[in-house]
Length: 248
Image (cartoon, rainbow, N blue to C red; front, top):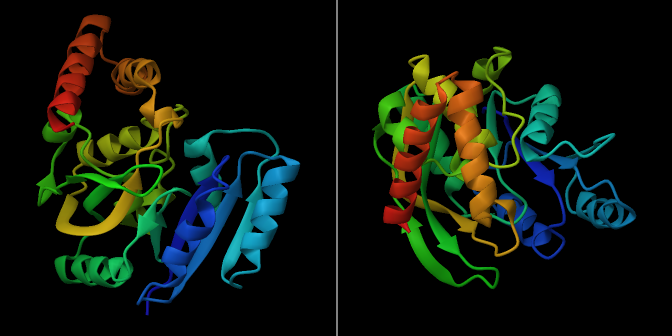
C-alpha cells in the first residue's frame, strides 16, 4: 500500500484547520502522513498546531525560521516527506471521504505521475457557490492560457519532485501554477479526473482573492519564470485574466 504525504502550510487559518485535518483523517484510504508547516510562527499558531498534533500520531510539524509564504513552505514540507505520492491540502480546504482512494486507484490504473480532480467552491461559512470541472488531460498550451488546476486536488509522484527544477515558485499567489506549467512544458501528462472530491474555500481575506496580487504574480509567471518579453507576458496575462472572468 502506497504511503501518501500530505503537505499543509499554515498561516492564520485557526477557524478552519481542524475541519480540514478531520476531513483528511476520515479518508477511506488511511496510509498517509500529514506534514504541517507553520509559516505564521506566532504564539497563537504554536498553540493551535500543538492541539492539532494531538488528533493523530501521523501528523508532523515543521516550524519555519521566518515567514516564507505558502509555496516555499510546501517545498520545506516536501523535503521531509516519506511518501511515494505527494498530495496538497490548504488549511481551509476540505476533502471528501473517498478522495485519496478514488484518485490513487485512477493514477495507478492510468500509470499517471500527476492527477487533479474537479472541486466545489464554498464560502467562508461553507455555502456552495460553484464547481470547477477537470479536463481529461491538460497540456502546456491549454494551461498557459487558463489555470484550471485546484491545488488541494493534486496528487503527484514524489519522484517528480526529486528534480530540483520542479518546486513551488517564490510568489505570494500562483506559486503552484508555475510548477504545473513547468511539468506540462516538459511533457509530464497532467491527468484530470472529473469527479468532485474536494472543497475549495473562497475566502474574502485570502491572498488568492486579491485581484492586484493575482495580476502582479500572473505577470511574473510569464516574465520571470518563463522569460517572455514584456509585451508577450502582458498578452498572456490578459488571456489568463479573461479566462478567469469567464469561469467566474
